[in-house]
Length: 179
Image 1 (tube, one colour):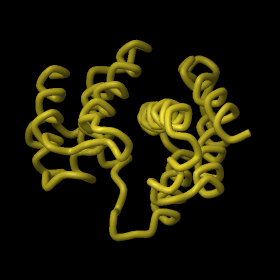
Image 2: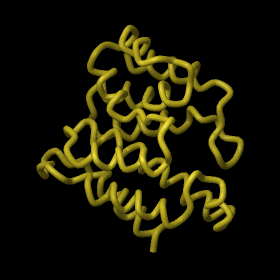
Image 3: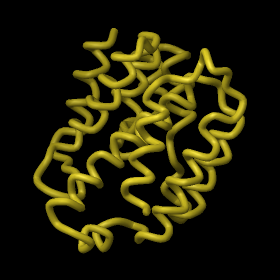
Image 4: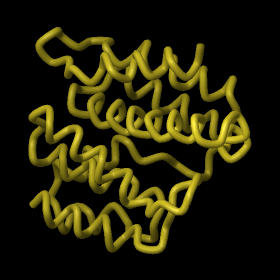
């Protein structure tokens, strides 16, 4: 099922590129899925990682995800799909609110997604400098608020056994970028 989800994401995101550089967009969900797979995530969570931006950023509807990948994958994808009719700040506040009370797999998906985006941002800042902030929907201060809020909420309600090691990595990345 993981390979099928990867192919589905590749087809859905075909022709899309990351905001900085000429990098195919699908590299992002592939890296998120690889991170979760590396830390022993369930097959459903890895599939959701491949598919996490499909409904949000392509014409594909959530019903098609459910038809192809089942109820659990759909629940995970839906938990992290933003409503693009809302402002950037409203969407991010919604993610923070979900993160506070979410089950472990939803937290892992949100944090892995954010961590990969931060790694890309860090690379872009090294290559292009602070001009990178102008490319995004929100500048430095808003991005700082959002990422610090993610780090603050990600552990809420998690036991030490349920906390994946990459949660430490995102904390370090936020500190490096938003000093």
